[in-house]
Amino acid sequence: MWDQEVREKLAALRDRSRTRVLTALRKHGVLTQGEVARESGLSRVTASELLAELKASGLVVERGSLSPPTQPGRPPVLLALGEGAGHVLGVDFGHSHVRVAVATLARSIVAERERSFPVDEDAAAALGAAADMVDEALEAAGVDRSGVIVAGVGVPGPLNRPEDTIAAPGIMRGWHDRRISEEIGARLGLPVEVENDANLGALAEHLEGAGRGYANLIYVKASTGVGAGLVVDGRLRRGAIGSAGAIGHTSVDADGPACCCGQRGCLEAFVGGPAILEALRRVHGDRLALADVVALARSGDTPSRRLLNDAGHRIGVVLARSCNLLDPERVIVGGALGAAGDLLLDPIRDEIRRWALPDIARSVTVAAADLGERAELVGALAMVLRMPSEPTARRIDAALTELANRPRSEAAPDGPISAGSDYL
Ligand SMILES: [Zn+2]
Image (spheres, rainbow, N blue to C red):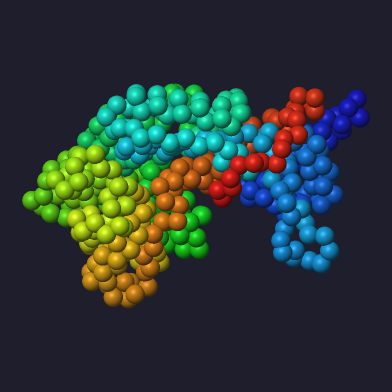
């Protein structure tokens, strides 16, 4: 009897230790065996035994070795969660596109889909398109839906998180009064974490793009809509209701045109995609997309260059005020217009020099986004994989624990070392 009790206790202890090993790998992506032991608080011997078991069941795989080696001798092998450990989804709704990606818990993207779509007008249609694209991507990756643990989702409007709605009824008209995460989760059939798209862009650039190493930054998504994400002291700042960074709806002209948010003369009404395309319509017709405007400007088209220059000046004036408020180390400009590079960035730099406090203006650098138009999608994955909320972290760890503690015969077979593209 006593023996039985001891055996059960030891088995439970081993289960918990296994979970700690998997959690350490989830949190850090790749680790050496020594690092796994340290991060999970286990002895090297126990960590080594458990890793051998987990490798045999395919939940942990080797991902090359540390180079250059930190010590003489054989370089330590790097370990990561295997394909069998599960997957997450990223979904990025823009005003005029939907992107989805499937990624492993080891942070490799294994399938990706992109489609132009008028997202704002009809929420049900946009959700349907996203759900179809998720099915396609899962099929392309050969991933069963039951192995998907959670989806990170970006939406192109300021969020009212307590009410789970878009913060102003005119922005994303077709989504008005809808419970955003509830409906997206129900349509995808998955637990979801929803975030404003510019916040996701900020997170992605901070972790893996032009904002790496900068603890204080403003990321601007300049696209169909204009929004910003704020990283302060290394953390994404959402504000009281989740709407921080809505710079597109800062009024720059009290007599300006009415904006979808209900105000007048918003920045977005002047420099958002529709305003730029409308201004170029008489010159280039009405079939132009923002990417065409950027390409035309880069090839020397004077009207397109002028429009981007004017947009840069307008965005720059608003950013100069934001710089005084936040004193960031770096301003990063992404979205479809961000691809214009210095054509858009130089006028932004001019206005920050002109309107921000001189010492703040001298210390801040303005850079183009590294991740381009994929920043928001990468951010959606990074949110659930690298900076998950408590419930998401618990959900992933529970899924890992269940897999790890299954009887061996049911465990996943040895998976191949991931063939996906590393994104983080
Ligand atoms: Zn507005």
